[in-house]
Image (cartoon, rainbow, N blue to C red):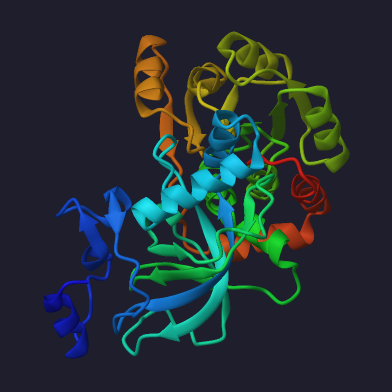
Length: 358
């Protein structure tokens, strides 16, 4: 950090609440859009220093890294370390996504508004793409075979960051997995609640965000829940969970197949929620949605041009929303669903046993 910034910190000044003072390049952008962030572990008076314990990579990011490196654990580990080293954050340059982390509060500045205290174990509910991050152990404890990454190092939270103290009644990997996608059920509840007795379709319904979206839609008053999955194994897991009224198989990247499958199961859908961590799923979701309906894209693999131009080209009168991962009360809601819905918990357990995906 340069001398003027050091002087301001020494004088008790606060940094930018959105982290502008941590941007190294290019000048004038927010931390999420930055090429490089300053990872200096000395917190400003309104910052919080986190000693990291575990990262949770975004599903789209992990899948891309896994594919690019042919599943080679050492190569995947090296790629993550290189991203963090060069950017000062975990910001996959291909997918544009990152993830979130769990750690312990090491220091909380006297002017931090987050209400965190040293010793609190927390999960950060802001993306790693905007979180200053330094890894000090070379990820020696990570086998490279899943999204959850044991790690040593530190991270910085800004005044406008969001974090949740970890619940004592849930294992850390389970809580972390739910908090990583906690925006999905909260936004689903908000959207579904705006319809009367809607049909809701969830693409990627057997994954983490998909299962939470199904459970949330049920509570919000959905008349019929359709779970769309790609293969027989996913279908069997979802059927055992009891979360969907109908389980249908279709490749989410095949628009005609998705539309036909949803229609045959009782669609078109009034609300379609996309929780698939591969690109190319926009057009199927649009075709599967009724005129006047809503498509919620809760996936970092979503292409805005593909969605916008595809809907235009199909003359589809649908509202399209990009889930931004934050809705007030989202963390509490996701953890409640995890505790109270056995089907959700079973699907999460299956994912954590070695089947990465959102």
